[in-house]
Amino acid sequence: MIRLGAGSLERVVAVGAHCDDIAIGAGGTLLTLCSARPGVRVDVLVLSGGGGEREQEERSALAAFCPGADLRVTVHKLPDGRLPAHWDEAKAAVEELRAGTEPDLVLAPRTDDAHQDHRGLARLMTTAFRDHLVLGYEIVKWDGDLGRPPAYQPLSPETAEEKVRLLEEHYPSQRHRPWYDREAFLGLARIRGIECNARYAEAFAVTKLTLNLGG
Picture 1 (cartoon, one colour):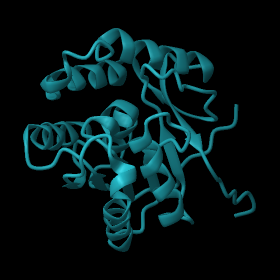
Picture 2: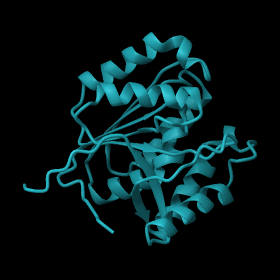
Picture 3: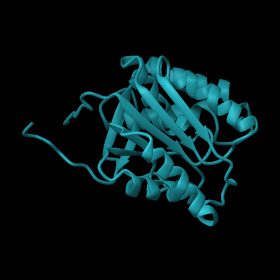
Picture 4: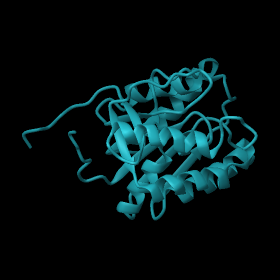
């Protein structure tokens, strides 16, 4: 298996359509990355949930998922499930984010995610961040849209357990959902771990990747 590192990784962008998307899809990766690179700058954009309980949950959770990072979080108030109808506002938010950072890595939803909010944000990201490594995280759901991802971030057992603990601790508003439980999160991580010869892992889609093998 080929392993490509991110080299000098100083700035990361992470975006979600909803509060908890980033933590569910890439929480273990953020824990791994931030623990290994104290002071890394992480710019976060979330399109919905601003101004209430969900925003408070998100800010508390991301602070825990990004230990030691220079964390900057923006949470907007677009209505959940209505991103296509608020395309201009979403595009403006992404363009404002892009104008303020030059990241080494972007974590975003997958362009083939079945949820219209996730999918719409993903498509905005690949046009706004044209010359960046954009990794599309996955979120298990009723739609059954999980595929065969080409990129993996192995997680130590301790990191996988910490991810689940933080998800359970910081998002009490989501505990009633039938899919929001330890078995779902660890189960998917175990499957992705098997696929990359690790105990646990998070998996990502890659829309476009430029190699520099002669440098």
